[in-house]
Image (tube, rainbow, N blue to C red; front, top):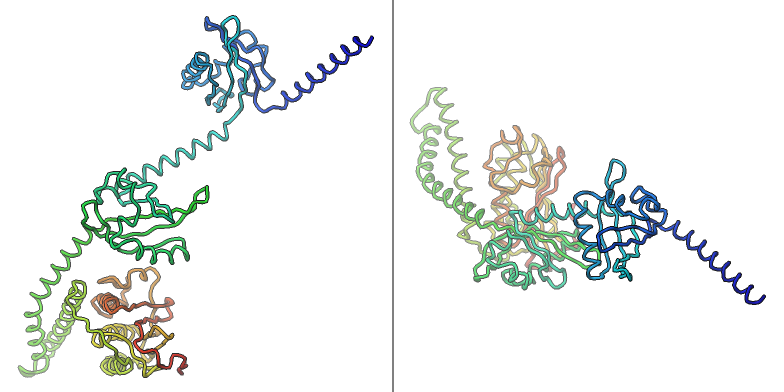
Length: 505
């Protein structure tokens, strides 16, 4: 009776285990299965969980003696790889693992299978494993792969050099062909270097400049920098980039390194051409302007009214052309470094007052008054007096030119204890938003009939910026379109003993 009781308890326990296993199998995503392959090539699926219907659209009974219905659902393009992978798994008794598509109504869905093989006594092979639906995950993976492939093609086809570097070590992680070509390196040689090996003068200067921008905005540049070729020569480039953090938390920097050798060559040819033409025009134009001035002034006697009007127009136009040539020559000298800059400590207020006095007549003719708010009359700065006067005159004449009649132009000095600033404010039309990025470019003028009708060469602000740059200073502006503009010149003070905290009127 005791043995009988134990046997009955064992049967009940096994039945409960089978029931529990059956419930677990039914709840398992996809399908659990056994697949058997005989030496003659016939195959069957002796066991399959109910999920086989969701995967292949057949029941376990349909494939218990012949697995052909399942293979009939495999995508024709994937069938050869599925067949070959099963053959290799049987031959080497290696785990079978495959992703492929099967029919699902009018569509194809991606599935993934994994099974472990074993040899049976009759030389057949039995696999024990699972198959699950991975359609959504696979489609996302394929979409990402396609996106990466497209980005890779753009990366390689880009005419601008691109590099991916480690943020801390500056080691190269990836480069494109447009960077390899001008540097003369092979890919494997360049990948063994870091960014400091390419930057003329070392990475410290570039890094110090870029770090502040990266920390504040996540980007740096653009700025010009010489790049060292493999043979030791250098070429000019514009560098800009951005910092990113990859999925593992590693800080990286994408950089665009654009070779501007051809651009510099064209600019040099253009500047040489302008310089040559300007020099050739200056002498005859000076003679023409002088002769017209004499005639307009009555040196040849009183002219008829119409002739006098025409001579006056010609004299004004020749003066305008003479100013253009003078500006062109100034710009050419500044760019080529042939304009002498004599830096010395100067008290700023007398320079400003002289400039205002010189432009007083022009302001009166335009119906504009000038007010000077001299907050720091004793402050000295390190500048070239004549060049500062030239830069300020450009700003002041522009302010007068664009100010409405009976308005006021304000010149003001500001000092923060280190940098001295001269501001020129007007009540004119302001700077159009679409023109601000080009305002300091050569020959730049806003697209306005009112603006162009006021005259000017379009070189004044470009010359001003070049002058301030060569003196170690800067120029900038603030403006609200339709509500005036404030332009400023900034330079380092040479004597910080002045009234830095003085508040003007």
